[in-house]
Length: 54
Image (tube, rainbow, N blue to C red; front, side, top):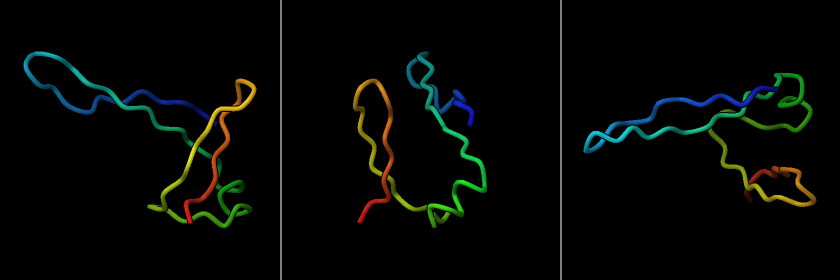
């Protein structure tokens, strides 16, 4: 997996970025995730935990 920083927009001479996590296709298939679905995230013990939103 990879964490990517992407330029989002510029407003009043300030640049804003967003972060995207690239997940391997095999993991997405195992989790039965689909593109465009919303995920919930939380941090526990310094780890990011993602779950499909109900």
